[in-house]
Length: 364
Image 1 (spheres, one colour):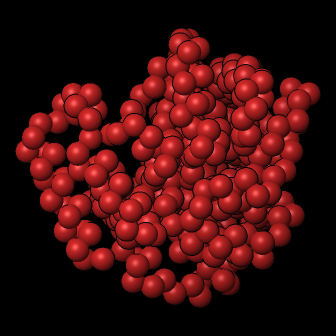
Image 2 (cartoon, rainbow, N blue to C red):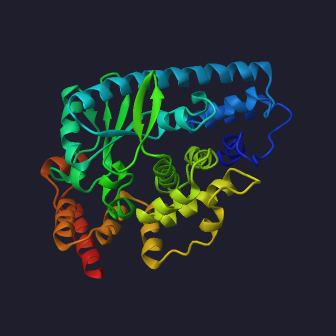
Image 3 (tube, rainbow, N blue to C red):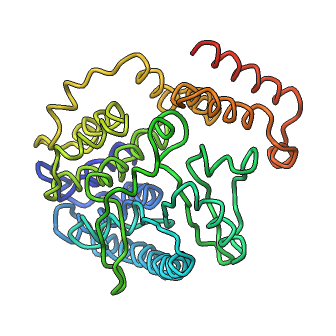
């Protein structure tokens, strides 16, 4: 079963959700569906589709689904335990932080947290605190997967990095939502201007406010990979239909310079999830006319030529001021030898990167 066939199941429970199979699938198709759902982190939606009777399943299929879902929920509990430990450490070091995605969505917007499983913990900190928090995690034996091309690059320009605990649990430490132009076009400290609180394990944890979370879900859906992410589209739709002020979402997207990807995400959520009822913001999204710069920026994320290098090149135009642009291009064109060794890059590739960045600069 393809990812596209999973989409109707990801939309289960939303207004206007598509009807699902009234007869159980054969075993081969069921195994394919369950595997695809697990890969997409959509077993919670599949589980509740079967539990509610929206999707027919045999007793054997129900049992297999329950086992897989229980294993995912156990992983979520371990990650929530990690969240508590790391959150306490950040508080003890006077670091302001926000919980992003995953459990923040599950506990705040879904009918029950079991609908929305997750595979890591995403935390947002200010750029000025990013290196200090990275050092705290390193001191706790977390392994950082991606390193700075030059010291301080992520704290100033990057999206963030993944840190893996000694037992294999992951924390994505963010400075902003995405790399490239849609992450560099606004002051990331603005993400801390408003917050909501969500209760997890009897503890109140700060998240973005609902409008900010809707924008983040939208960006993750359409900028996080070449193919739109179904669960992120469901997150966006779920937030929008759960009493969130749609006008605030639109205003926030415009304020942060991400109106184009957010409008695309709204339309994709309606079409790919097979919803027969319109979503809030759909009229605005359908009428959104991007300018040339927005179209070019989106191409760095959503085209077949998508790559980190393409996003980095496109990011030059989003930076304001000559000095930040020069610092950004210098870090990418001439990274440290340790960074090059880790990526096994030689002088030819470094020269090619420098040439491309120089051309990008002259075009602007």
